[in-house]
Image 1 (cartoon, helix red, strand yellow):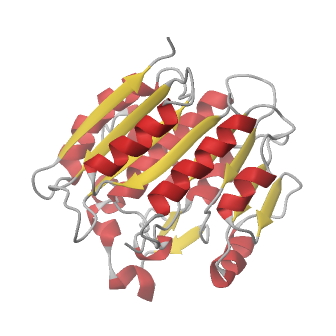
Image 2 (cartoon, rainbow, N blue to C red):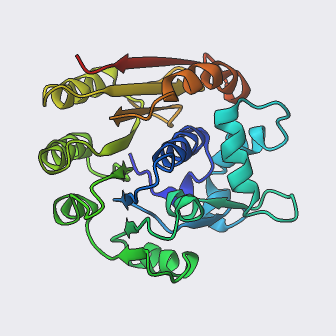
Length: 278
């Protein structure tokens, strides 16, 4: 599949991923010590939902648009809506912030972000989208290479966001191998890995490979708006977290049933699988 961010900005997958991303960042800020964030496949940062790319496949209409006026949204979703509304000051939904744009306002002065984007046009747009600050670095480099070059961070604490475009048929395996290697250098880091929910068997195998690395706390959260299938359009997504923040599973249990109902276009659903350290 081709999951170039511009074609899918603001869809159901972004809603799930970014709500959890903000929860992870808020959790890291509970401690006063600095932390680093590595976004391995950052995209362009900001997305115009009325652009040609977005209108070619207006998936945001079945995603963030369905949540925009949600009164009484669960806290996990309400936090995301507050963050997205900050990019739409007039109250009309036009701009959707990608992960690096959401990360920057959540950082403190001493918390650095390394945002990696290899595609030349996307990289140039990302540089324009993010503020020029000492703690923000935009890299024109391969995200998989960055896992080896930029970890562990000097801060010793941090979040690694892995959200590749899945343009290669073996990219799920590549991601698993990259995370496995990163864990050898940064085992206590927090990892947030997004995957398309297409083949349950492939995801289960990838999860098992990572869990075999040792005594890791993990959490997997899946959300689908219709029945997932190996072929065809993306209707479900899966998040796999290593060293997830305290309280995230409770927040997901409170949010996912309502979120699935809100976004569902068919046989929708959700599930959570948490494995604590032994």
